[in-house]
Amino acid sequence: MRRISQEELNKIIENHKHWLMADCPNWMDMRADLSNTILVRVNLSGINLIGTNLRYANLSGANLIGTNLSGANMEYANLSGANLNGANLIGTNLSGANMECANLSGAKGIISAIDFLKKYFEFTKDGVIAYKTFAECYDPPENWVLEKGSILTENVNSCRSCACGCGINVAPINWVKLRYNGGDIWKVLIRWEWLVGVIVPYHSDGKIRCERVELIEIVESN
Image (tube, rainbow, N blue to C red; front, top):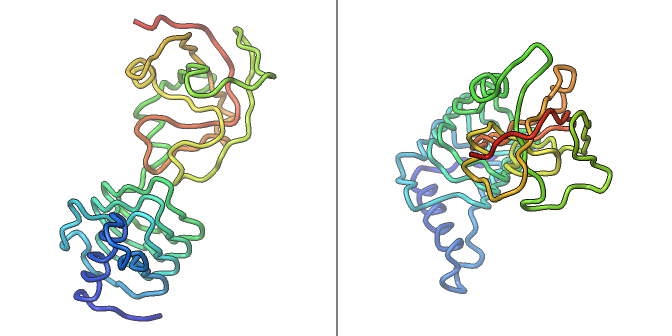
C-alpha cells in the first residue's frame, strides 16, 4: 500500500473536480485513483467537499479506517475491498457505489435496514405493509396479475449501494402520494417469511425493493 499526505490528497481531489467537469482535455487522465492507499484518519470533510465530490473515484482496496467522509459524494465510486472500519459516512452519498467486499464494521451513518423498516413502514401480525403504483416508469411483467390477493414475484438486486434496481419497488404511503402521477395505488403486504428478500439501499429516500409482495387493496390517492 502507498501512503499519501494530506497535501497530496488535496491535490488529487482538486484534479478530480476538474476531471468531473471535463473542462479541459489535459484533465482527462486526472480521475482520482486512491486504490490501495493508506488514508488512516485523514479528514476529508476538512478539505471542503462542498461543491467537490469523489463521484466515480477509484478507492478500491484503500485503507479508510476512521476516515471522515461525512457529506462526501461517493456516487458510483469504486470502494470494493476498501477498509471503512469506523469511518464517518453520515450524509455520504453512496448511490451506485461499488461496495463489494468493503469492510463497513463500525462505520457511522450506514442505514440500518431493521431500523429503517420500523421507522417508515407499518408492522402487522402478518408482515410489513407498503404501497406501490404500477406503469409509472416501467410496464409490469406480463405474468403479474394486478388484483386483490395476487402474489407478485420478481428477481431483486441485492446491492444496497443501488438506490434503484430490479425487484418490486415499494415505499410508505406518504412517499408514494408525494410522487403520485396517476394510476392505482396498491396497499401491499410483505409477509414476515419474505423479509429475507427485502433490500434497503444505503442511500434510500424512502423506497425499498423486495422479491415478493401480496396485493391487499387499492387505496385513495388523495
